[in-house]
Amino acid sequence: MSPDLLEQGGERLRAASGPGYGRVVLPGQLDLAHGRILYLEDVHVSFDGFRAINGLSIDISPGELRCIIGPNGAGKTTMMDIITGKTRPDRGTVFFGGTIDLLRHSEAQIAQLGIGRKFQRPTVFEALSVYENLELALQGSRALSASLWGVLSGEQRDRLAEVLMLIRLQDQMTRAAGLLSHGQKQWLEIGMLLVQDPKLLLLDEPVAGMTDQETERTAELILTLKGRHSIVVVEHDMGFVDRIAEKVTVLAEGSVLAEGSLAQVQADERVIEVYLGR
Image 1 (spheres, rainbow, N blue to C red):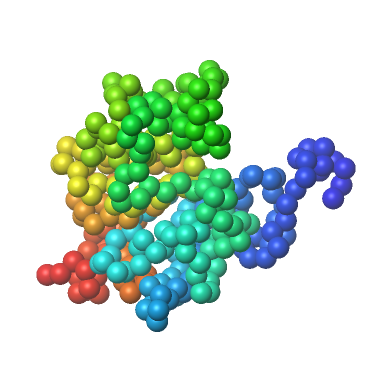
Image 2: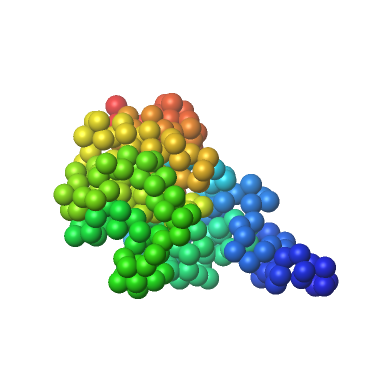
């Protein structure tokens, strides 16, 4: 590597294999030259002989909001487990951008790379205030006591204020998280991901158990985030999917059954047969 490159960018990394082989990127920089932020190809996972994921191939573009639907047991949650390193596939390719092979990284490393995941059930610190939950997420690499007693920079305080406005909990910032409604806890958990500025958000059934009003506010929040982050939403609520989706992927038996707009997949006879019914 030339001295000029070293001066301009410091030490640079080359991918050892996979999409983007040979492309030079700065450490910590996501290579989006191929127009993909997430790429899975021919992924297989079996549990005790059951094929949970069977030849799954899917790719997500930078800034895209993709909805994933399908019957129970279709492999939606397992797909998220694979992306976040919780489950290792038997075979297949899983890349974040053009050069980061996620199968070579641990769960903690994948989170640090910029992939944030919200599970079906909200996981917040109920004894702490809304603000303290966000502060802890912002400084998650530090010890709990240090995070809560540390001094935030002006930039960090501005970031927390911005996220509080986005999730519409600015009036609840001093309230214990355990006293929030179910929907508010879901928004708080999304906020805890947002303060870490993830490049890719994975949201697993974000409106499950919500009231109609909470569901509508969640749709507004996600649409606000669209373009700022790449977002993958797994959801069963078709009204909610219709509200937010441009492109929908239908999974069945661990692979892609159909893909397109919601209207297109709803009209697909295979989707009607295995998921929507008549």
